Image 1 (tube, rainbow over the protein chains, first blue to last red):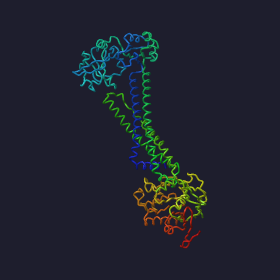
Image 2 (tube, one colour):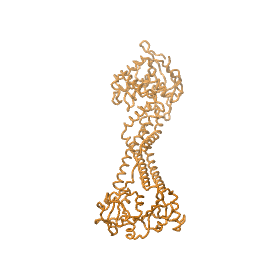
Image 3 (tube, one colour):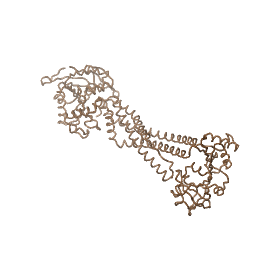
Image 4 (cartoon, each protein chain N blue to C red):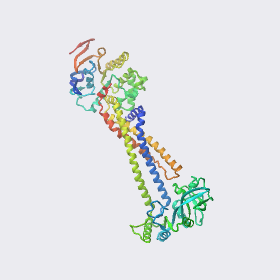
Length: 403
Length: 236
C-alpha cells in the first residue's frame, strides 16, 4: 500500500520537472554544504591525529610563550641553550632536540626567494627527525657530522619553488653562503614545512647571528616514565630557573594530548558554526519544499476531493502528500550528497595541486552519506506536513464542483 | 426495500449576504435495485441532493438513511468508509487522475480499502474488460476519448463492488453515441442489481433509462413520476 503511494508520489513529481528542479536547488546546495563541511572536518581531524601519532607518545614540546607571530619572530621572551641544559637534567628526560628558525634569502642559479631556515642540533638529529617523521625522498637526512650541508623540503623538487628542480649535490646560496644539498625530504603536507631548509646549529648561529636563542624544544622521556609527570617536572624546574611563577610564566610545555585537544576544540567550534549556517539554509530549502507542496495541494484540490469521494481516509491523503514531499527532500539530499562528494574530491585535488598540502583530506564515511539522505527525507516530510494538513481540509463536494 | 432515504433534508449555506436554500426540505425513498433519476434545471438542487445521498455532504437539517442507518451524524472518516465501500461515483467531467493510467485510476478505490496488490491488479483488469477497455489499460486519461474516460470512471465506480452508483450528468460532456454507450452500461449494471441514481437536466435521458423520476425545482421535489407498464404516471 505504501509502495503504491510512492508510485503515485513519483508520478506526481515527474509531472512538474521544472518546479521540482527549482525547489530542489535550495536543498541540494545546503545538503552539499553540510556534507562538505563534515567531510572536510572529519578529514582534517584524521590528518592531524595522524600527525600526532607519527610524533609518538613519548615526546612533548617546550616553547617560549607570547610568540603571537609564531616561532622565529623577534620577541621579548626567548629560550636559550641554558634552558635546554636545565631540561636535559630533569629526571625522566632521555634526550632533547632544540630548533630555531630564521628568515633567509635563498638563491639558486639566478633565482632568488625568501624562506625559513631551521637550525637543528646534529647530535640529537635522530630525535628531531623522529619527532617530525621526516623521511628522505632523495639523498639522505642530515646527521651528525653534516656541518656545512643542508636538507631541503619537497617543494624544491616537486613544486619547483626555485624555478627549477633542485637535486641532491646542487649548491644553494643561503644569505650569501653556499651549501650543498645532502637530501630532499618527502612531502609533509604543509607548504611552509615543505619549503623549509634544515642546517646544523654550527652553521645556523653565525650565519643568522642567533648566538643562543631556541624557538622550540622536543623533549623525549625515558621509557617507562609518565609523560605528564615528566612534563610537570620540566615545567617546575624551568620556572625556578627562569624566576617565574604561575602568573608570570613565559614558556609553555605542550603535550600531544593538549595540542590535539585544543585543536579538536577549535575545529569543533568552527565546524559547528558553519554547520549552523548550513542548517539554516536547509531550513530555507525545507520552506521551498513546503511552498511547492502547498501550491500543489491548491492545484490538486479536485484530485484530493476525488480521492476522498472514492474512499480515501485522512491518513491516506496525509500519507500521499507527506511521502511526496519526503521524496522531494530525499531527491535533493541524494543529489546534494553526490555534489558534496564531487566537491570534496575537488577540494582535495586543489589542496594538493595548488596549495601543495596533503593535510586537507576529506573523509567520506558511509554513515555520512546515509544520514545526509535520511535527514533530507525527514526535512522534506516535515515540510510537507503542513501543506498535507491543508489537503485534509479539502471538502470533496466543493473540490468536485469546480468544473 | 428502501435502500436510501432522505427525511426532511435541508441544505442551506451562506453565500455572502444571502442564504442559499439549495435543498429545502425533501423526503424521498429509493429502493434497492431502482434506477432513479433526479431531474431538474440547473440550480434546482439536484446535485446537492445527490451529494447528500452519496454521503459527500451532510444535511443542515433532516436526516439521510443508508441501509436504515442514519449517516447524518457520522464523522468524516466514517463517511469516507461508507463512500469507499457502498457507493460508486460517476461525474460529468470524469474526474480521472491525470497522472495515473486507466488501470491505476481503477485501482485507486481498492487501494483505499486496503486491497492487496494482486487483488487490485486483477479486479482492475476485470473491470476494464467489462467496459471494453482491455487495450487501453496503460493509457493516461489525456490519451483517451471522452467516452473512454467515462468508461474508465464507470470501472472505477465499480471497483469496490458498491450497491449504489451515483451518476451526475454522466453524458453531459459526451457526444450522443458515447453517451448512449455509457447509459447502456448503467442500464446493464442496474439489470445486474445495482441501484443507480442518475442526476440530469435531460428529460429524454431520464425517461429513456430510469424507472422513477424525481423532478426538482427550487430545492424541492416538484413531482415524482414512475414508469408503469411503459407509461409514465405521476405518483405524487
